[in-house]
Amino acid sequence: MRSFSFGARVLAGATGISATFMAGGLAKDKYNQYQASPIISTTPTLAAVARDAVKGPFSLKAEASSAKERTFIMIKPDGVQRGLVGDIIKRFEQKGFKLVAIRMMAPGEAHLREHYADLAARSFFPGLVKYMASGPVVAMAWEGENAVKTGRVMLGETNPRDSKPGTIRGDYCITVGRNIIHGSDAVESANHEIGLWFRDEDVCDWKPCQEDMVYGDN
Ligand code: IDP
Ligand code: MG
Image (tube, rainbow, N blue to C red):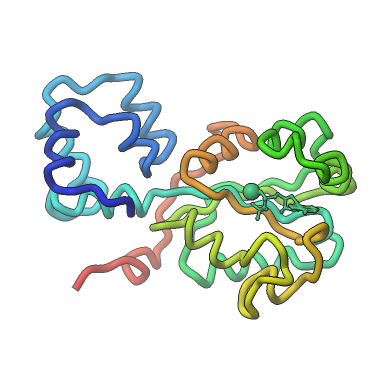
């Protein structure tokens, strides 16, 4: 979780939940909820939210919000064509992350241009969009503590050549042009991408029965 000192937490409590804090980890629905009803008496309310979220003391609030972090993972057309959907989902499930949205679809080029807008100036951009539009993809949102950063570690490097064995790209692919999977690179881009690929009602809030075995402080 981002370094969020106790002082900063108190400050956030005294001034209301800042956009930075929320972008740093609260689930989108919580974010919308907070935006819709601004908190007036902030400190006790914030503590209550933290207690509700983690069933523990206020000091665990940062952990509570990081447990809610979501990342956007997409199996690209080559991953689907090569029959890797099950293996990739299995890795995220076995890690302990929670699947909160999944959708198979054939995105159009306009949608893909938006998804990869930050790469529009790159020479490979037209080829990337064409490749991504060449067949169905499986779009997913996964939730869990540190889901964005850990998701990237699980994927490996952008170029499979530099990816370690044990990572998805390290194990299943060879070239950067066919690297089978996408994963968000930051919490902010994850929230943006989840919003781009899913409607709010497609994202499920649920509690896996194994949750208390995956998360715990001793
Ligand atoms: P990432 O997928 O690891 O986040 P980005 O730099 O965001 O990597 O690039 C997005 C995608 O664009 C890559 O996953 C890959 O499919 C493609 N790409 C990146 N660099 C190259 C390249 O040099 N040649 C061809 N395709 C590339
Ligand atoms: Mg990227």
